[in-house]
Image 1: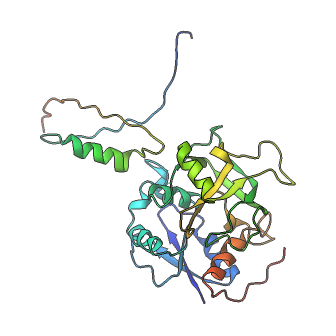
Image 2: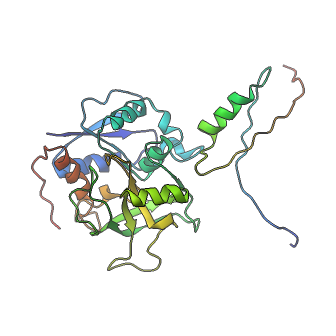
Image 3: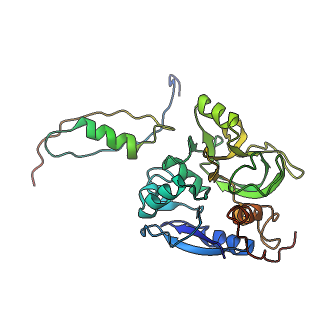
Length: 54
Length: 239
């Protein structure tokens, strides 16, 4: 195998949010619980999902 | 007799050994439960080793939200001696009682061996019974024991005498004296006041000649009892 510059292993945590997303709240959850900023970095990405039929 | 609490979280596994160490040192070990905020009048608390909440999310990350931790954080602020061993050290970092964090061992392997330490600070509630620079031998057994913090924090810890113990080469050492790549060989640190100490190796496993590589670890437990000014009659322990 050639051409691979780097490999990263990390965690991906998916949160399903009903209604409007409060990004500040999501950031707080990530900062205070899901990640420890002393030893970890995190990024937040938001994706729209299609309405799921119940 | 001085009462020393030992917290049991789901997944703790060295709580019994810590209680036994307290007893051998001449204190009364009191079992505390993660879900019960009552500290039952204990004068010191030990957070034992193990894998609280299965180490899910991050070592110690869930445990710090336990009901008992709120009481412990408050008591620590009032000066109560608190010792975190291994997973307990991780919990103290997650609870922000101690700076920095513990990450995966640099070589990525779980490390289980008898480890020489150099006691750096004897100004804490737990280590006043040692001589500065004294070398002690206690077991270490961890996969995420690599102490890290930013350079400014490390400098401050060293400047203020808050590095409690460092990994060291001793008479029986082989290979690298640092078992996990901890920055500046740090094995244990304290808070500014010296009442809260976190240490990665396990002093509670070195309290009896029958089961430990030494009885050096007993010094932490007799140390806190002396600190509290009410050490009971030391149990008979042969070196």
